[in-house]
Image (cartoon, rainbow, N blue to C red; front, top):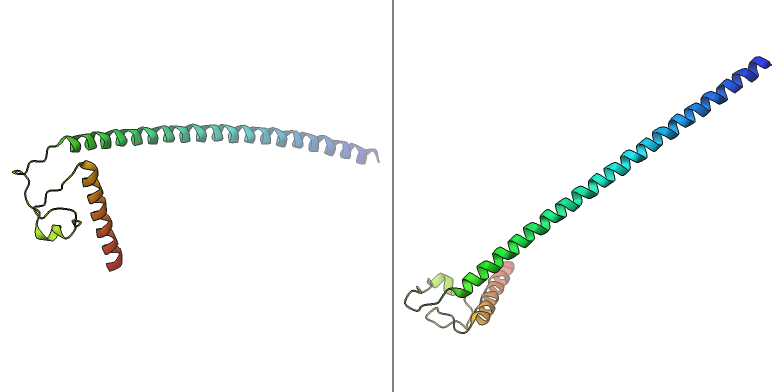
Length: 126
């Protein structure tokens, strides 16, 4: 009977050691997961910062382009008439000589209208 008690005690000691080893492994696993989460968070923040930098650069480029387009003078003698095929895209507010009238807000509204008409025609056709 004492042999059985000794064996049970040895089994209990081994089970306790095994439980401690498993608890230690779980703690290590938790540490690795936390480190991985922190690394992923750093990478996401880096990607976000890079994306914002790209968006800012693109916005600056677009603003510079818009300012350059607004600064381009429109001269009647240098403006070539539009081909007949392209005139179909122009809204009715554009004079027959192909030169838009009014300021840049009116011109951009005419461009938007022409684009919307063109896209709606494509959507109906396709």
